[in-house]
Length: 320
Ligand code: NAD
Ligand code: UDP
Image (tube, rainbow, N blue to C red; front, side, top):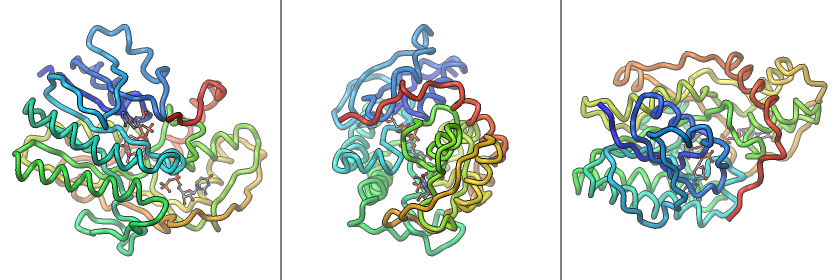
């Protein structure tokens, strides 16, 4: 059935791919973004589609629309981006969620929250299961993001319990792919950009910390599945690729795939940087019949090709 769908943060890395898929599936898509960490170029190819609209708006302010589904993707996601204006980051997750939940309540829309593995902080449980309550430093430099997303989950559950809003919560683990902002400071974009210009590859700390990287197509697939499941399953559910790599292994793979002559160099580890991260995706397998298909080598190859095709001068740092 054709739905009227709002995607907040729809011009961002993940949001733009989601919009693309929903438009291709024939839905009426409203992409809403304040372009804090993204550019219009991410969705410019959709502008001439009759079932696509773009609105410049900030979700910390209310908006009146008529929709059936809302994907709440708006929030800076890279550490450098969310720490640029930490108070705004918390406002986006808290006031923004309240505004979008209010909209969902008025319209009777289903609303999905893009939560994060960061709700587990620097985890003592490995791999991370949804029942683990996390270990977040509430006064650290990552807290504006982690705690904001934790409050957002609380708001979603309270609107569900108190106001019967139909909610979904997905906890997204590190996701990468074409259209990542080349200067977002995330490890995949940094390493590829550095490798392609034969610069030093900056490993923070000793590079033994781990992450598990999911390719964006796998991610878009499962969040659409989660939104449309009508079994009563609302989550939270971990979404990610459980193949775990050290950051040093990632650097070596990027060098191999790009043929870079860049050397590995060590830089100080930022504070509160999680030591290990890997999703337990049993719940997603059981409830959504989903597991990722694209291995890191394949996804990185496609991402490197995309980085080779862009002009990085077209990308600017976040603007307030
Ligand atoms: P992104 O920075 O590319 O996208 C976020 C988008 O939200 C951008 O277009 C930005 O301009 C917009 N935005 C930010 N604040 C806004 C506001 N107040 N009002 C309107 N728009 C606003 O990041 P992404 O990687 O595409 O992440 C999308 C979502 O997924 C985020 O909510 C993020 O927390 C979540 N997530 C992503 C990852 C990942 O690895 N990519 C992991 C966990 C969670
Ligand atoms: N990292 C790194 N070099 C970089 C950027 C990041 O070694 O140039 C490390 C970072 O310290 C962290 C991991 O890579 O341990 C993932 O960082 P990212 O910012 O991509 O995501 P997050 O920490 O939010 O998972």
